[in-house]
Amino acid sequence: MPTASTTPSKTSLARQWKELDRDGRRALIVKVAFGMLQDDGEEAVTIRRIAAAIGVGAMTLYTYVDGLEDLHRQIIAKGFEIIHQNCSSACETQHQHDDDWMPGARAYVRFAIEHPNLYHLMFATPCDPEDEQFDQIMHGGFAGLHEAVRRRLASTGLVGKPLEIKTQQAAGRYWIALHGLATLAIAGRMQILHGSLDDVLEHLVDAVSPTKPI
Amino acid sequence: MPTASTTPSKTSLARQWKELDRDGRRALIVKVAFGMLQDDGEEAVTIRRIAAAIGVGAMTLYTYVDGLEDLHRQIIAKGFEIIHQNCSSACETQHQHDDDWMPGARAYVRFAIEHPNLYHLMFATPCDPEDEQFDQIMHGGFAGLHEAVRRRLASTGLVGKPLEIKTQQAAGRYWIALHGLATLAIAGRMQILHGSLDDVLEHLVDAVSPTKPI
DNA sequence: TTTACGCTCGTACAGTGTACCATCCTGTCG
DNA sequence: CGACAGGATGGTACACTGTACGAGCGTAAA
Image: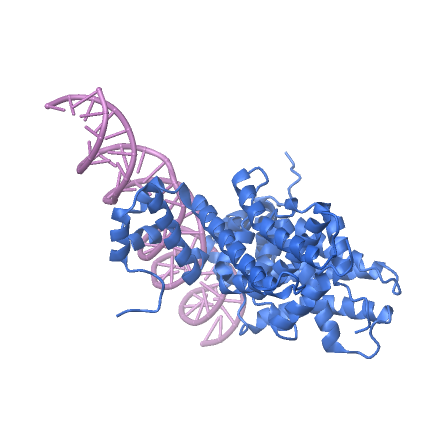
């Protein structure tokens, strides 16, 4: 009885597990947890459930992952990789001189809506400024957005000299708007706004995109 | 040894409890839970802990509250009341013909930053469109924001006829921006943006505020 | 062969929400 | 005044959670 679910069978996972080395097993754990987050929500991501899915004792996971929080960090890092990739490729597909801000914005919001549990985990998990690993991940994710904004501004002639701070601030506002829309949409709070999500997004991007030289 | 904590002593709560009627006890439970959320975070809001704080058995709470989810709903409703009140009074204090959008925006973001756990609970809790109680609460909260935006637009002459849909959409964008900033600030993600929070807020509000007649 | 080390996981502890049900208290009726 | 009914109370229990501890194991080095 094959199902449409992306979850591999337990026996398949057990076979994979046996053949993998340390890093591979670590990756497999994250992958399984990732799938569970996607399919069943954050509360379903449980050490015992993951272990059972792979076909291994619960305590075994602790040999490869430093507890549930660490596992969450791994999932978040993977999430930032994906969103970075999605938005980058969405920006690439348009012509360089096109000043259309929408494809990247749409890719961002679509990612959030298609991965609500993941997006929530990525941004609702509080991170302390001391954690340099988290800082690394965040900067990596934001760097992609900033780069896209910088190039777009350059292509439209809105920025002559490389005013890093200014473009970073503009990217920040862009990000804030996208993030606000994404989180409200995920939480099911968009129904009280009139108009389709795409319309809202378009007007929002229009409002927040720099139209004067900065 | 008096502390600065807002948490009343257990004996005091037990005394209150005895003197209260059904609704009063229900309100007391929500109040205690509210304080715990504020002081110790969402995970600390526990049936057993609340019951212990009041000095009553855990199962007793179920006579007044329909489980933890219902309790969360009560807290969320209280949160919307407060944010509505804060933003309204902030908007009132400025002159009617003043087109400054900042006081209300500042009040909104300040509320979120001063009540991070509450704000997170209010907006991260997914609500299904069927739940009309939730719908009621949401509409109440948003109505205040919409009203403020509508009056401001009217005072600046940007809207002649009462174009409800348009002003509601404008209010939606305003809200999305504030919400995005608030959630990123709460999650500690603002450090990678340059400039103070107030600067970011000012530029953001400037970008998202309607400047042409709509 | 002996020793050492890392992987595995059964057991256990301290939590969680909450269902069930015996007890008790209180208000009402005979 | 006594008896009964109904709601409030909370002890116990079940199914979960994360994870600490330590015993058993296979493999590799000495």
